[in-house]
Structure formats: structure tokens, C-alpha cells
Length: 145
Image (cartoon, rainbow, N blue to C red; front, side):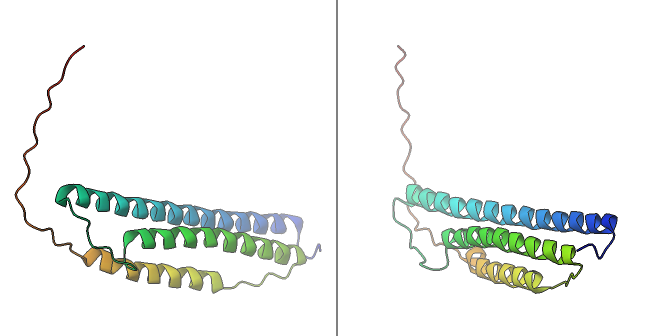
């Protein structure tokens, strides 16, 4: 267990912790973006109903709520993978048998690329708003008590 000097082992553990915290920040960002995208999609949906007085067509798969949910799930999965990897590296350092792997980097890269590609249709989608004359807003009289 003491195959490497104590100071080197300490540095390796600190580097492992910094890497874990970087993955944690990334997962928090993914969850935050997912939440914001999903809520903003709901806001746009409600705004469209208020403006047009009609229910807009709903895309069952390609909508911002689904993309936001996917980002939140991916963020949560990232936290779990980061904790698993941190623990794995911790024990490899303790045993003096660290083996680097790029698997997590490739998984993150692939999923972010896929989610990015899935967001392109949302960016290009243009809803056709039916033309109608705007309804004038009547001022409400206020009674002061």
C-alpha cells in the first residue's frame, strides 16, 4: 500500500479530487441548462396560446421539454459516473496501480454531440403564426379605496 512516497500519493489524491469537482461542475451545468431549456419551452408554449388563442401543434419527440429532460438525466448520470470513477482512481492510487482510461471522456463527448444534434431542429423550427387582427386591449378602470 505504501509503494509510492506519501507526498506523491497526496498530490495524486488531490488531483483526483479536482478532477471529480470538475465533473461535478459540469453535471451541475448540464442540469441547470436542462432545467432552463425545459422551462423556457413551457413559457414559449403558454405565450403562444395567449397570443394566438389557439393550442399550438406539439411535436411529440423534438421539443424543448424533452431536450431539457435529457440534459437533466445526463447531468445526474454524469454525477454518478464521476463518483464511480473517483472511487476507482482513489483505490488505484492507494494500491500504486493507476490506469488511466478515456472511456468517460468519450461517453461525455458522444452524449453531448447527440444532444447538440437533437437541438438543431428546435433551433431551425419556425412556427407559423396565423394572421389575425390584434384585439385591442381595453384599459381597466381602477377604483381607489
